[in-house]
Image (spheres, rainbow, N blue to C red):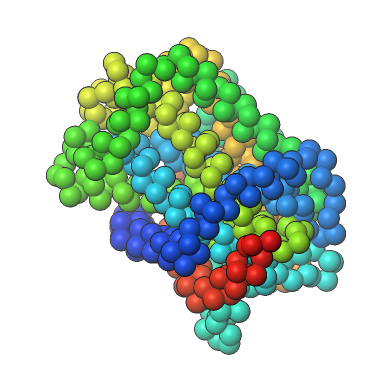
Length: 459
């Protein structure tokens, strides 16, 4: 089973995913005249101008800041720490360059996703706003085709995020907390299930109240630690940037293999891990942006772009700089490539802990990353459960929400007590399958996105 899943994932990430993500990103960048450049400032201003830790209730929806906080909560998870580490280990430091490219183009993609999610959202019988790709997919393709594509997407996201994805996040929490503090993973699992269950059952208002507080605090905590490390390693920072650009086009010099094969690995790792990190084009964060109570869809589109910018160009980049400057640059243990005895020690899950430990010391470095990853992954679980639950409601009705929450909590606990390459593989698989119907609909609805941009963009 694992072999089959890995084969499919390899084909999707090496060919289909790269083509689709780059294609839709280029398409919307050109058609919108690089909306991610023209309106990024407006999006950042909207986020920081509306920053509040007491946003309150918003009639079945969220404030714009609560929505982007929920989106960032979903984006800034293991993809930024463990995913970036995995991309660097497998594809070399140059994989970060390709993650930047994917994110830059993805900013225009996520603008389109947020705009369409706002345009097609609806309210359920309780007055709660429901929105996301299933709604704009059925708008793009009325009739049986749209229903089939939307159902495919809904099933993929329920499995990708609500089940296997949450296992990946809770597994990272359990393993890092155990490494840092020696707390048994099953105890971490029980605590996580209790806290998550309380928030899940509180609905959109409770989740929004948590994410608007936790996201600014967790981001500030991690960024402060990363900046401190980079100050101590400042003499290696220029070399670090040089390695990112050099090994983006010459990855064989550090990961081995032929030029073509190594370049394919670097690009595919950047695309796959970039998707897992910023989620642009995947169809997940539009569920949060659909809930925002804003004057017009364009505003939330710019906010969504700013969310990807913060996720990739700030949080992920600082983590990558710490890893590369501490482990690859200068006399780092990986300066000569990923070879020798070190291969049996350094893995995706502890690479960041090892890097921070170079400056903070082994115990403090492991503890710092464990605390940061706990909040990152915990907030991601909250966001992903909401996104999956919206699709459960669309597929099976409101009565299926509470049974799904119970199933999700079981998956969260299982993730903390066991590690399975198959679970990671299945999470990657369904993440990538979500992209297919979502991107098809985005292409089909280009006219709708451009009409909204032209109508509200100049205001």
